[in-house]
Image (tube, rainbow, N blue to C red):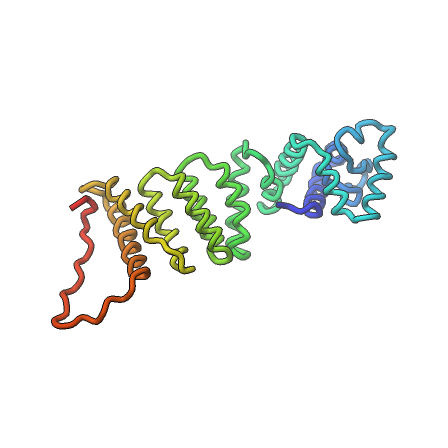
Length: 284
């Protein structure tokens, strides 16, 4: 989530972009704007809780309180105090307005997305695009784990199963290197919410790879996903389905070998080569 200082800086940039008329209205209601972020020529209106600056005779008192908090504990404490005093609905309105303004002006996706992370709903289509773009940029230019907040926010708002699987796999991949347990938790939750056998098999495959990398058991998850996929494909599974089946069957065998002790050395004539998995996905 964007820090108070980061919010103040970004909001200041939004104020300067919007011009003095809009910025005066924004600064009257936006708890992130401090006097240091005011655009040149704009009326200086101090930050305050809802209603405190709507009455002209209260502005001086509010400004004095702001200065006392700022002097005693610094700007962070001021922003936290204002955020706590501002109704949730007002914060949503302000964050949505700031994000829309910055997006319309072509600001980097990560700056815009910082305002979207706290919204309870992603009501407008461009919001999802911004968050996905921010996640992509984070993966390309920073540690992959930096993409996690954007992907996690997308995941909570995903209603379509295939979209949810796609985003969940991306999130687990972003977490795997730095927090594999969190990645496994994400994949477990995704398995619980996925009914379609094919995407479920894809989730199980990533679960198996992540679990084996950190020494966690994965055989049960993989076996169940394999059996579900086999039943769904039937005896005449298509090429893509059979390829997915072969991959998960290979993962099951790998997980089983990892779990089981090595067999004793073969005595007598060696056995013939292992029989390759049949191409048919159906039972039998």
